[in-house]
Length: 229
Image (cartoon, rainbow, N blue to C red; front, side, top):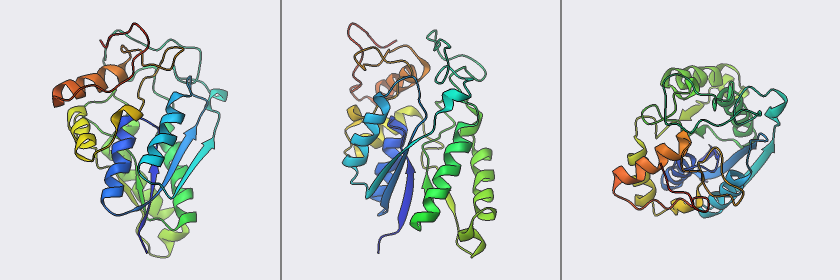
C-alpha cells in the first residue's frame, strides 16, 4: 500500500508544487482545500484542477466562513494593498489561518491514516506572515504528536514544508521540473471580474518576480488590460 499524505491545497503555485513533490515521493495524495469565503472563488477552481493534475485519491473542499471573524483584506471589506511588498505583517494576513488550517489537516490525516501533512509555506520570498515561519511549523508538529490518538499510539505525525527555504524562483523552477502546468494555479489576492490576476498585489508581484528570476515565461492569466508590476 502507498503511504498517504494530506496536502493543504490552496490553488496557488506553492501548494501546487507541494502536491507535485508529494506525488514524486510516492505518496497517495489526499488534498484538502478550505473554502473560507475569501474574496474570490478563482483559487478554489484552481485547486480542483491541480488535484486532478496530480491524480489525488481524494479532494475535500471544506466550507469554513472566516468572514464571520473578518480582520483581513481577504475576509473583510478592506482594500488589498497594491503599492509593493512592504515591511511588517500586511493586512492580507488572515488571523491564525495556518493554525486553523493545519488543525483541520491533522483531523483529516488521522481519519485517513496519513502521517504526513504537506503545506507550502516558505520564509524567503513571502509576505511576512508569522504562521509561515519555521518555529511555528516545529511547534505545530510537536502539538500534532501530543494532541492525536495516532501520536499517543506511537505514530510520528510530520508537517512537511519542502518549500521552506526556497525562493519564488526556486519554486517556479520546481514546477517546471515536475512537469506541472503552473498556469492552472492562481495566486492573486484581488482578481478582476474575469478572474484574471491583478498584477499588483504582494502575491502577484512575488509570483511574477519568481518566474522572471527563474528565466521562465510567466504563465499567469492576468485581468484584461493588466500588465504585471
